[in-house]
Image (cartoon, rainbow, N blue to C red; front, side, top):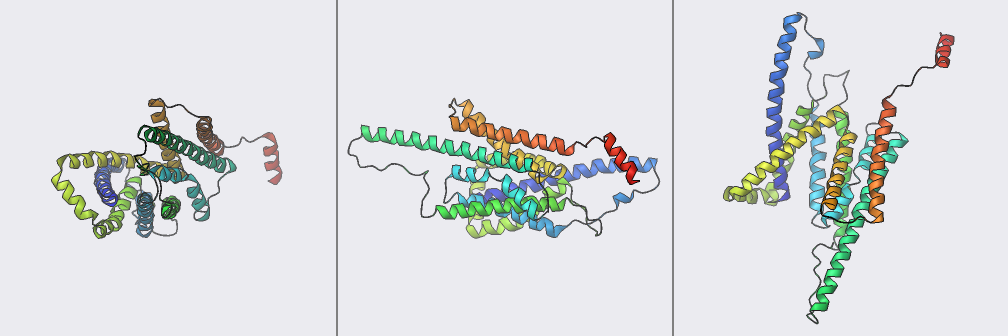
Length: 337
């Protein structure tokens, strides 16, 4: 199956799951509203219906799609570990775009935390790449010693083509830039429009409309590239593939619920930190499970990542803790009065 067709299937599954979620939420909310009406005769002015900012939702969905397409198309020119290495620095463009577009002000601890996590993950992936290349070179030299003079070339399927690798890096930079714009758009969606007649979308509305608008971008791309016809034919002829795609999309859709809840309740930066850390911990546990030994660089990388996470937690804790009013502050207040 083509990558774009898989994205179409995922977006369609997300629409179905978010529609069910929205209906269940509406049923529960209507029951709660009935209970409120029975105890109060005056309507709640906060319940006045306002429209959603669909133009911003379409823009957010466009950056969401372009980021995925950029990272998927980059795999045609660079190796998968290189793409993972680049996407591990996703925190920095999210913060940069948040500073430029949303006018957010991040503390020094938050910048240091993001830099530590990004550098730590980059070092960890670079060290793994070095170990993989060393293992392959050792295996290839052993094969050459056992088969003298066969003239066979070393398999370089996983190596990047130097003539076209710049295209893959350009696509990865494009994908990271779109990730930054995506986080800023999600932050703008959460802002309350006090002057206008628009309201912030809920988590389920964001998930629903973003994936609906994503289909308007993805389906034409899949049809033009021929992946739509090929994917439909494969799904019609292979029952096991249909079941595998169904289970995959169901799991992804459930995961998307928690992602959109995190973005709505907290921020896009918090969501990016969680997803980036989850990927790192998954790789870390897989390395430990298969019994691989850590080098000094890898241990330093692990320390940087978890040190950055600790710094992020501490900075949020101090930022959310109000400063206690001292006697001097009280005296100053009295003098000002």
